[in-house]
Amino acid sequence: MNPSVVSSVLPFPNILWWCHSLNYNIVIWDLAEHFEKMSFRNRYEIATANGRLKMTVPLKNGRDQKVAMNELEISYAENWQKQHWRTLLSAYNRSPYFEYYAPSLEELIMQRHEKLKNLNLASYEWLKLQLGLNRESSFIFSYESETNENVPDLRLINGKNILAKNANFPTYYQVFAERNGFLPNLSLLDLLFAEGPHTLSYVKQNSSKIIFL
Image 1: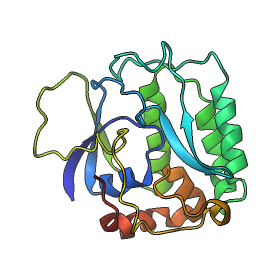
Image 2: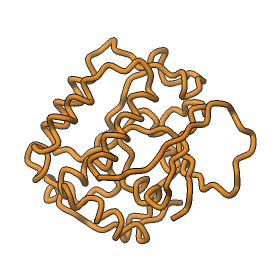
Image 3: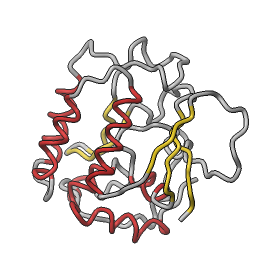
Image 4: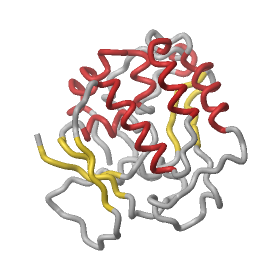
């Protein structure tokens, strides 16, 4: 296994991200990069009765600010936490394993984090715990004009212009598949609620089949 990989700090990273990051012992989180609007640095996608839905964490001073991820603050002007939880409950209460994960996930979502990085890292740690993974994190706190070419870079994997090649994306159970068809590369939450303890096996078995542009 390779030693480390660098990544943006993301909330509930998608399946594509996990398929690639599992090849590394250490995730290096870039807290120096500037927030990029329309990216997944403050959003994650789930499957609902109406199809794919982006769940967005609102930011103080809006999405157009040029602030390092280390300093970006969450807005609580509206009760987005309650809205997120109600949406997750509505979308997944019929999933096979949702009931098992719901108590600790609700507790996580309802925690009040001042900065976006803290929420994102907490979501990663929660998912890591559910998968039974034991690997380290390190951090980039200052801007580096050149990246170490020996360290793979996943910072683009959740960028607004990066798409998964979905032709061979292996299907799994989704509650609304009969209505919407299979929706690939959602947040790992979607896979977790469907596969439960088999989630890690799915990701490991299919990581070589799922690539990104």
